[in-house]
Length: 474
Image (cartoon, rainbow, N blue to C red; front, side):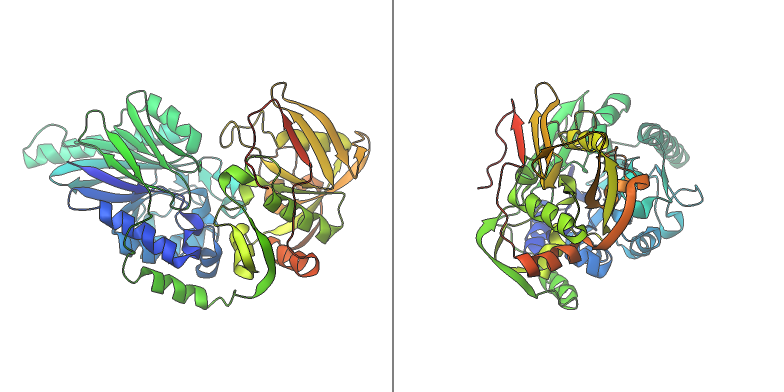
């Protein structure tokens, strides 16, 4: 049997060192001489500990799990290309990337050991790997704006051709003859783009990430596997099966990887982020189902804080910017707030027309934007109400401060700076709308919580009609 043990998008799992140790323990329990451990991006960031360690906490995880290969997600560049190069150079895992280019247009990280493809022998059989990253990363992540990303299908096809040719040449030189590749796998951080890879490339499996929902299915005779976010599961891929199969394993019950929790806790202790900001009486959920399900308490809290810091007409938080994790219960610390929005970006103030604001409200449903799952809700608002007809893809009602939005008036909107940079989620918003900025987002949350506490409620700000019920966050 030849297997892969695959994790992806583990992001802020490091903020709970014991949880990270259990995840690493599950990886270790599934690994063995007939397996190779691989990641597929967003393994270094975001998160509180990631922010403190500029992503280098993943080096502890690589060591604990004997990870062989990883590829770049959009968050590997959260602290800039140079910080990324630094941890790549020091990582025991090899980064496989065929479509990321540096500031000069050259393949990214070649001096630090990044390769477009690689082969690895497992239990006497040779597996070939190619890695690709979402080409929208320079839009998704402002810190990656100076990088460029080739078309992933073309880049992967070229890398596969080169790999197969070089392996065949090597075999001929050795006198073996033929193609010695027993299995071929793409390490992908494309999300929805994996389907196109499967249809266009001759590979056995695509180990994917980027989109935070789980996946385990066959498309065009290719196995597509995605283990979810924050270590929800670890994928065990059996490449010896015909066709390959996968099983998703949860980390609960695994023996923690020795020493990992202590190493991560030591890094965290240096940050001194255990100040209690407020105490909540009723747990505040922040799972993916909650933040992408429509109005929710944690989304209202963030949108209220954004509006408060600028005294704006409207506060807007993108659901994708709210990182998932354990519910807030009891003491809420500075670390908890950073864990929710662990980005060193300010809260920006935008000025938009009423007509543009209506488009922004429409984009919360993302009817025209290919991002995430089809049923995701993408925004949370403060001092506004939006009624959306999901069947008709139409706003039935849009008000600000209780009054209908006037298309000819101007409104100020407090948002994450990311939304002015990216065309990926709220394309109506752009840098031309920017008129001011406040503090870093998590600092704004802390200041707002100190003054107003943390007691958000669901108030009817967003109503979604003709759609399956959203997640219950009462």
